[in-house]
Image (cartoon, rainbow, N blue to C red):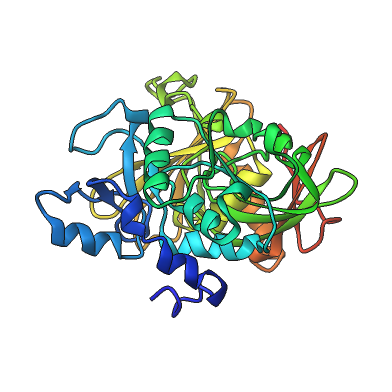
Length: 376
């Protein structure tokens, strides 16, 4: 299955056979559903072994922890916080990493330990350092790694800091999402090293960046595939509630009203969200579901100054918009989507990322063509 999808190459086949996924999955799990970004109901190996095995050897992510371990029950918690990643994504990212014999690798986000085990089998445990922020998750991963006869250095700590004691690294791979590449990863990487990490703006949309570290301390490279990973704990977003914004609760509403031809549905694809988030970095959204496929899309700024909402109704070509505050957020979104169409409706493979000691920026087609950022 994975070979048919082009994810599992011959170079990783021995590790795949030697390091079975089931050895790194707990008895209780919540499998991903269609699209991979939602969890199904719990499956317990002790009460439903056949279904457990079927899910473990399906190409879906498996949530293994909710709410940083504070939710111990069998129901789904508020937020998934640890998982065993989708096999296609695991092997696609490992392929993008481009490891060779003798390479030292830093992994950020140990999780269940399967990814670290695959690396350790191929490169030798002495060449792999893996960092996990959650002590309980790290201890369980250590146990599973030891049972498999693979013992890479497993460090409990903030993955944003990397692990300087093991540097320099020839490869760095993150199995968690980020909105800013921690410069510590670049500093701890050898010249010519590769960094593979899922990157996305707070608004949404995420893709895997493959960066090459230059002698000048600059890392740059293209986005190579879409992704959907849980955030690095150090970079989790906390957005203010909608009712904290001025004018939201006022009746009658003080917002200005108009219609738009830009459908909220035209802003919902992963690459649309990515483009919006890159150009308007303080933007976030919320969705209110209505009947018969209708919904309300809210655009809000993290400074709590402005908001916009648009009502989507199926089959309509014009949509009602309300905007309030010193900024016109729906107008900003219209400008971004107009730019996107003018540039030929780029997908992820046309975007790239540059990281320097002073910051980072996304570019289109070439590193010298930065994507515009709309600063309020």
